[in-house]
Length: 547
Image (cartoon, rainbow, N blue to C red; front, side, top):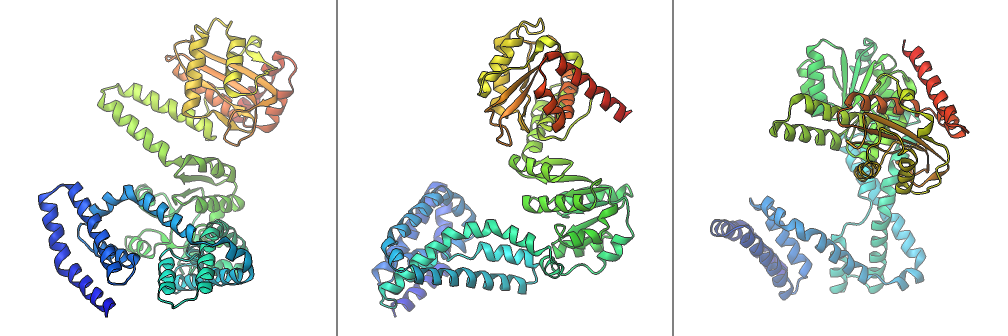
């Protein structure tokens, strides 16, 4: 009866009292009063629930339901965000305090059996339910992996079962221990699920299930296309690209997993088809062997990597443009074979920079120079190279080559290299150059991997352009992108006015030193003149290649 009375009280509050009270509070007070009253209401519901013989957690749960249905729920959520992490921490600390390690030690077999039953059972049920909703098996597996653990509210139910003698102490400890272990193991299952999907996709039958039903028109459309563009993911970015391509009469085909988007685009006459672009079979159906460009607009790093790898395995000459949300994904996408990676944080930063400079009435020509310089610096670090005139050897003399750097840390090596070449007439102020280079390193590390670092800076401490090379046989702990020691440092300094020279030097360095054999030959040099000779040979070879 208490429970029924509480539910009736809950219904009256939800329908009649709380909406009017919230409106009144919102009308007479600010957001602080509104938030304070919301917290008091939630705590009050929990206390009332406890006073009538129910649990605090149940009362708090019903309070949350009332708040979530409020027309002010977005404002309430915004106010609660600062408390979210604190409450979550307190919750899991309290759950951890309920665990009895001795129970796990004394009953390992029972805990293991229940653990396996929960993980496999929840995985299978969730995967099946998602599949019945007509999602591809790939999506179903990922959903099943993410929900394989026991939810936090189950702890409340188990505790109530013990409180009302519905569960024995043994069953309670068994359920609690197994549930906590599922929460610990699930992150590893989520991490392993992409490998499971990749392994299953190697088998034609499983691959067909993983990607779901293919668009029946896909095969026919793909066989008719060649030298075309394939857009993988037809969301806002893909639609913008497709609109321009369509206007320019450039042939393209789009792959999308949102059925509603596919139907809408088809009604507009767009070559958009339902299919998973990470599947080699789907890519073959859009004639990927004869495609000219592939654009992967998917924000998911795992999907982008799969697209890049599968396209390059079938069509190595295809130019691939991929999308990356974070800097850490750049190297992986380039390693898989992407020709250009658009990184969201970087492009957003450029857009903000341009608008700020325009607002400050900076000349358009100067803005373009700054943007171009940043792009070249960034692309030099991320291996999407710009090619300028190859004149690197003309900027280096034997006195600017140090073959035996002894420093083992980044800052010491930079100071040693600049100190060794500071006698050059082009360096006006060695200390200022060191300061600017180290400031640049604080913003973004210039160790691009493969044993190469390109510390550089623009400063008026340099006349024109300055290039110096330092070689360390033992390696420098530089904090490079790939975590490996740096053996070759190419120091690049330029005056603010030497814009074109600076960009061309960066392009030259990025072009030449990406070749592993060339790097090894440089490290083996015993005389500075040998380094310059290798650079000249490299320039001549490149000139013949591009002639």
